[in-house]
Length: 91
Image (cartoon, rainbow, N blue to C red):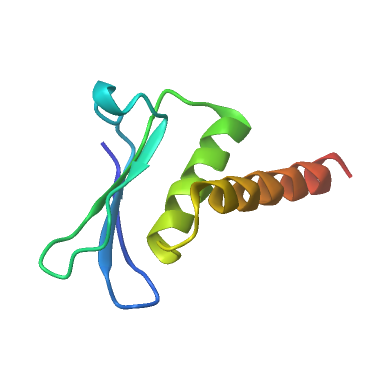
């Protein structure tokens, strides 16, 4: 399992793991909330491929850096980044 430690803008340490989130979440990715006493985890399903994997990784990283954004804003942001990257690749 890949584990990538990083720190967000507020100094919160996180760890990105490419591992399926627990089934109870019914999600391709998950970001735990900030917690100064712990190192919250982000999970991205490692069976995802291509742009879907990229989108979910961006989505969960966005939560870690901008926790207060709504799910709708995070989704729009991550999808827009992927669209831009895909357009550039097709150029």
